[in-house]
Length: 175
Image 1 (cartoon, rainbow, N blue to C red):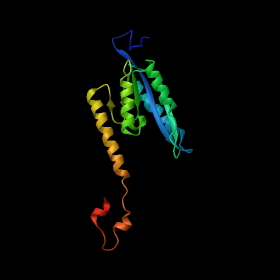
Image 2: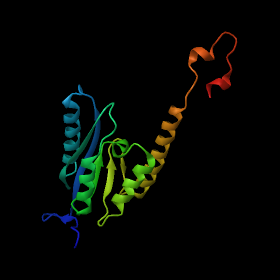
Image 3: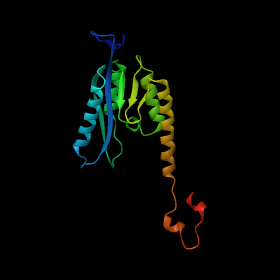
């Protein structure tokens, strides 16, 4: 089976890039639908600024806040469509929309890059485009910093009222 390749526009030498937008949201029962509408509008505005992009679709997973994260069926469908050669570029609002941990995220990027044809990623907030070698390095470094920052915030600290008991404050108690 041959995989589809990028299409050349008939009226120019410009290649059409088949783009899929991926979004994962954590919502509560009272999350306004306008949040999703705003994200759709952001994707469509971005698409309009890139006339060489052909939108394949928006793939959106919804996790309910307070619940165990569910299966990401839309992400799985996105990967299946990538395997079929339907998508050249996946656009996400931010790195954290693809995955919430470094190992999983790098695994997902590697999986998409290893497809035939390779599927690239563009993260809007971080302005990282994995089609550019420097951006791919920046992606790995940024995600490593995010993971490290997340670990630091998990370190339990003594409550401030126990650290400042009269005459007993010790700076090592804050570690």
